[in-house]
Image (tube, rainbow, N blue to C red; front, side, top):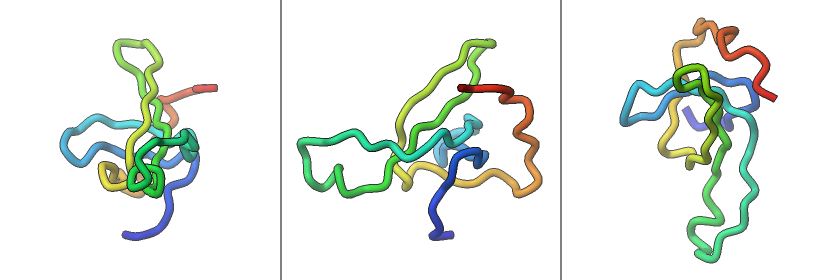
Amino acid sequence: MNKQFKPGDAVKLKISDMQMMIRGIANIPSEQESIAKKERYECVWYDNAKLQHAIFSKELLEWLAPNYDVLHFGNYE
């Protein structure tokens, strides 16, 4: 699947089962040109009821099942 993630999409890391939600596209400048050109996304998730967030490149993420219920993320703003 080669389409762009959008805010609210339920995703997981390809190398683990960590489930997250896309918060938005990460527009953080990078000194390394090759990194700056890659699509990166800010993701949010809960770890023991504490809201966490991090930025991941598109290559590390994959969609969860289309019918995955993301309502448990609640209000993450």
